[in-house]
Image 1: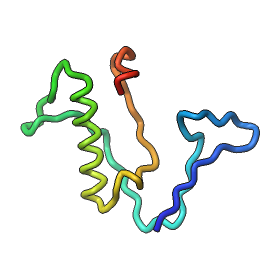
Image 2: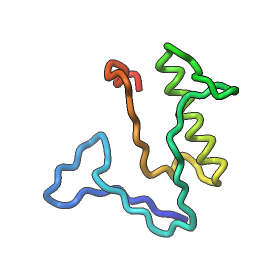
Image 3: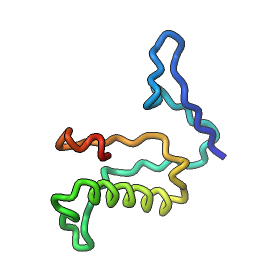
Image 4: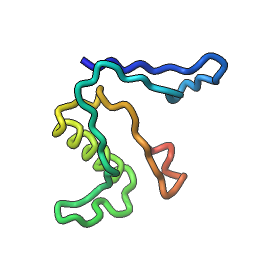
Length: 92
């Protein structure tokens, strides 16, 4: 079973909201998932104008990809998020 250890080097600020570094040991497989967005069934943009619904759909797509690869969300080490409107940051 993979062990995921979050840490910060001594002398480097350790912020409470994210991990400065993560070490994964004992992993038998590593998934690399491309950027996910809120697509509709036909490939068009889903939930146009509804940021919260788009965020939910995007995270559901990430979860589906992780599970299809044999993992769970507890196995996720890193997620990059890009917001096109900073006003949605608190909602995310």
